[in-house]
Length: 169
Image (cartoon, rainbow, N blue to C red; front, side):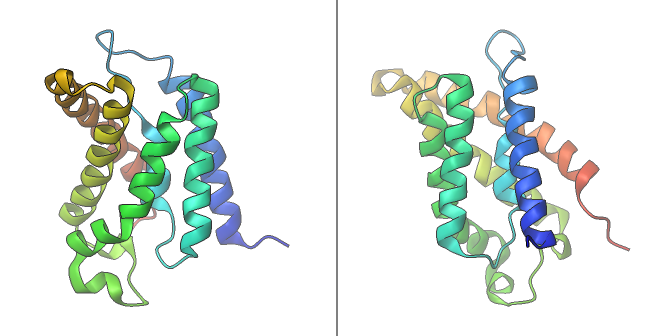
């Protein structure tokens, strides 16, 4: 029998892949801005879950997006990279509070949540566009695409987090 946490993780996985593939891959703002909203899976994933299953799930998340986007495992590599770095990013953003068993993302400040999401997105996009362009002679193009697409993804990500996260009372 599947518990409610596992069901919620599976539901988010499926919905974010479908949303990315069916909606956001079809949008190209100004011809090249394509927000990668499936990264929210890493933001919403429970903190104290099994790390190995988290890395495998993130690999399959990126691979599913790659299969439908025809991007040769670039999303999988970028997603596994930020999944691997997630504890370090959380320790940097949340400090000592992250180490406690009772830590919840909803109990942190909006600035900490914004910083956490921004770091996830920027690192993901930097890895993604470095692998996509794969040329150090185009470093300026890599940085330009990383910044512009990160801003659009961050705006949409904060919108989704505001709409779909549980409210504090």
